[in-house]
Figure 1 (tube, protein in one colour):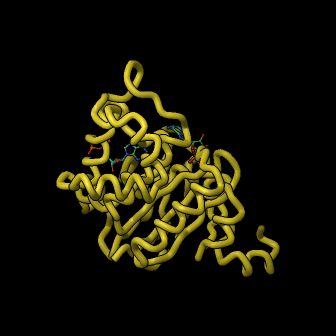
Figure 2 (cartoon, rainbow, N blue to C red):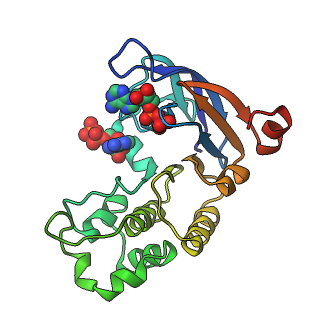
Figure 3 (cartoon, rainbow, N blue to C red):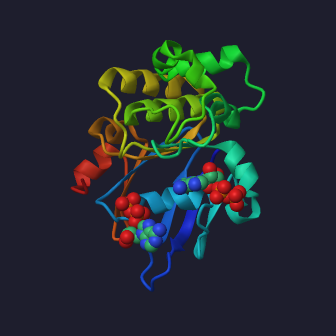
Length: 231
Ligand code: ADP
Ligand code: ADP
């Protein structure tokens, strides 16, 4: 499971000109799709359409053959991992945040996920922050820590569809390596969409989608695009 198909999908926020249009692509289970392109090209919009945070207004998006509009947002949330620094909810405690991913998670599972996301050490230093409400007056985490916590939550959830924005990520090389390892080994048939900024991520992707002005102007593997001069 986790096959994603965009069939001529498009979306306009409120203006006349669409933020994305005519997007067609197929991601088979297990594939990593890298979304690349300049700011404003439509990369985040593509992810937002996949979570149904926004609804396509042209064409459609299919998940395992089902139009995502026919799937409940709740179901999608349960089957999707969304990783960004901003996706972490700061109005509840770290433990509650992690349990959002898996309500019946055991203490061992929580620590294993923190461990695999290279977040266990800074949580262990201040264990009380597990139950302290984060936010303005509570626990503060750095950008890189938030990103790792967000990854820990995704690992705990182990969703068939993973959406990742590495744009703002502040992971050091070691963390990045651990995380990529964890993501790769935990589930071989997961489909991932990554807003990619690192060349290493782009190189490893099974499908690179080059967006410009809301249109998918090139797609293919790294070597194919290089040969075509598309990168
Ligand atoms: P990227 O992620 O590649 O930087 P976005 O998907 O954020 O691109 O943006 C695509 C287009 O949609 C841009 O023209 C951007 O200004 C516009 N856009 C993005 N978010 C909104 C929004 N919430 N309301 C109106 N327009 C938006
Ligand atoms: P509802 O309350 O109608 O179920 P939500 O707005 O809570 O809808 O969220 C719907 C889906 O969008 C969820 O999967 C959620 O994780 C995701 N989501 C929420 N905020 C964002 C965001 N800023 N960008 C992308 N996805 C988001």
